Length: 113
Image 1: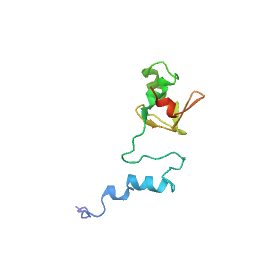
Image 2 (image 1 turned 30 degrees about the vertical axis):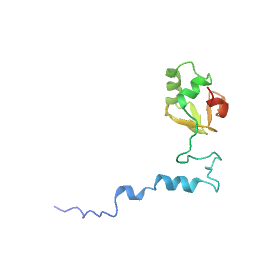
Image 3 (image 1 turned 135 degrees about the horizontal axis):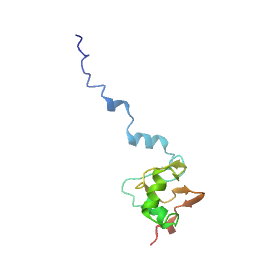
Image 4 (image 1 turned 45 degrees about the horizontal axis):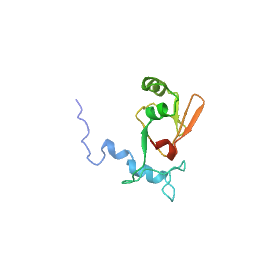
């Protein structure tokens, strides 16, 4: 019977993954914009936010939250050019939502009640 090699505390599984904040630093430009040109999250900055399913309902693309859920889970909705399957995805000023041939850019007027 062979014994397993001794555990090396310096080579834990989590050590090989990059820190999330270092990924954001690498993707940002000199003014703090991400690769798409939108402002990235900044700690302490108060920005308007709305969930993806609420955005679909508010702009009239769907009639109910249930319909929004189905469209999102089926992969029929893109956020900033990428398929998004999380209905509670938080969206911010400047984000772009596309579905069923419609495109919505979230501007300041979108967040006004």
